[in-house]
Amino acid sequence: MAAALLVLSACSGEEDQDEALPSSTSALGGSTAPAEPANAFCAPADALGDVGAIPPTGPDPADLREQFTEALDTVERAEAEAPEEIRADVAVLADGYEEFYNALEAADFDITHLSFEDLALLDTAEMTAASERVDAYRADFCG
Image 1 (cartoon, rainbow, N blue to C red):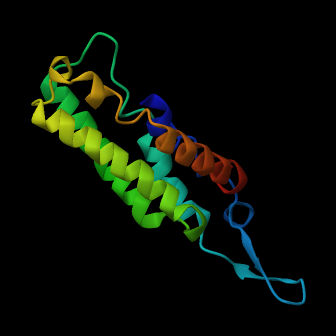
Image 2: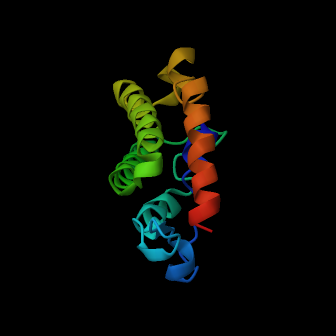
């Protein structure tokens, strides 16, 4: 679970904007205007941090509700801002996270009431592959 959540966490908004933006290339091989701004995606990705990580001691359900609601909002913002190159992968992550959130909500945010299947929702081959591709994009364009 942490891998899927943390995959969106390492974007740094501290880089110079021009360095963080991929450039479009013209047919003549010259650079044109920057492509979709990576920072629009990196900002919500950076905000996610490890807000969705469950402490090993098991948090209070009210705290968990607040924590995961905030994390879900951030994942949805990252999905809305995802560049075309990774939009499908970010959608996979967002869908998986929403499924997990729904399982938590059905358990009234008490992690002791989640099934093993619920706990494994973010630990699938599809989520891992999407996380790796998003992570590679972040390394190239978010700094």
